[in-house]
Image 1 (tube, rainbow, N blue to C red):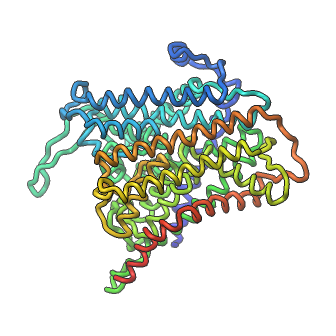
Image 2: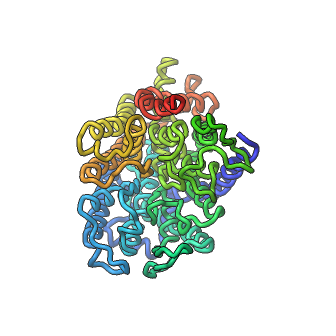
Length: 568
């Protein structure tokens, strides 16, 4: 690690936290019961939907609203894609999207995964990008934040079955958080040179005399919500490595900070919402501890000389004047540090966008983004889902602590009993079942095995990464797996659905159970959940869960690949 690396890391993290603080304050004000006022458009929209902001819902009704709302969005998106050729804003005359690919895309964007088994600039019209994918980028992000609000109400309310109104929460988040921030970031990206137009693609002749097609489109507006909403689906096939999507080092830095902005803000704002700011800072401390350690491990692995090149005495030492390390698959404009920071930010959250080729990472560097997803993306996490994801770990941690001291575990004045622990364990076990079960089925089936581009340990890593990304609703890919097959389109869509709603339903059930309980005053035997000891305990639970569950398959994949480098 060099001084410049540490300085850049502190700069990016410092700016992210500084911008997140006012956002945290605003989210806490938006969460407050008094913030029920809507603009005329908001009131009209709720009235047309048959909902009222004051009409609160118990957890089962709230969960049903989530499922119905998202199902309708998925059906509409699917219909739009399969009839793309009949719709406007299609200057390239792209044909209809094949049904199974359209199904995968619809599920992907409704679940906030944004997995892409297609090239955006060669498959989708401007209308499909904006009205189809763009709308779901807002609504899927708002769904996650609405569910987080409901879970926090479950922790703060007492003796009530009500968790708020899903439609009011979703609309409030969209109108007052996502739209204004996306407008600001979109205008900034336009100023940096990101296209925002409806022009046909430009046919140009390169310096060598070869023909070249330059894609156009409403890129900046799509990128803004892609970044801020933990969506990650790129307008272009190579995502943020494309010079139109990410033209300058400044646009690169702004997008990396934007990825972290709302996830950090919600965690810090959590303390304000529950009436004890120390609770939010404790969760944030655990996340920062994990993020920092894993980032510098990834940077060290990617900056180290490749053993084969080192044997030839090729200088690969990483320094500010020598990019060194492994530059394969990276944009020279960004280099190793910004590539690693982006991959860490986008997998620690559920953003999933990339500015470098993950398939080209060194094995021990590639395992870090994979590990971020395998633990459920709770190191900051996606917008909303990161907070309620780490709260599952919190319940397990306080339960373990309660067993150690022989007392009923408590969190924020609520007793954590068998009902809540069963739901939490169910949600935790569902994820490895999707990743490992889905990956095994893919590897053992003839149709799934045909998708693998590489043999041996690297091929195993490609498949494992794809199913981890789908289950974590991340959407990033090693890019060596051919996912646009009938088998993978269906299998990954199923995993994405389970990974999204298989967690949302349990956490809402936990929230409903906690909201109905009385608040218990703290006693001498209560474990302080804002202390350094609890931060260490929570961090240990996250690492142990990821390590014990996935170490065998990681040993057969990226770790075995790393060891093979020294064997030639």
